[in-house]
Length: 96
Image (cartoon, rainbow, N blue to C red; front, side, top):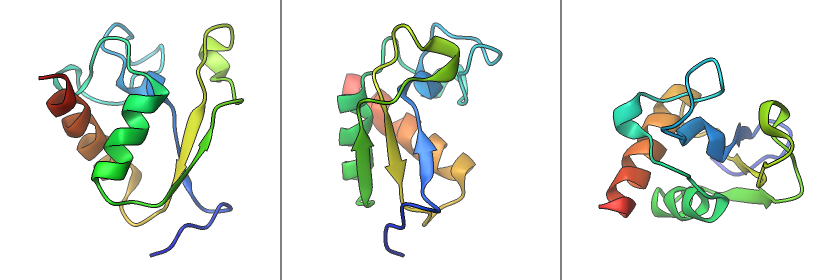
């Protein structure tokens, strides 16, 4: 599947922040999360999965607008839950 901006998944680094609770925006299990994920680290994980994407570093995460670092739009070749889990595994692997 190719990248289509209108249907792409939006991925925020905050989804993978181990210090956040689910209510604060973490979307993956704590074992798939890391401390202080960066937009660059998430981009590297997306690239490692071989997916097409677009960086939007000027966007602000609504629940963390004062410290947000941007977001990534990723092609919809996987379901969002599966995509987040694979990205989480890749982020953890990058850190170890």
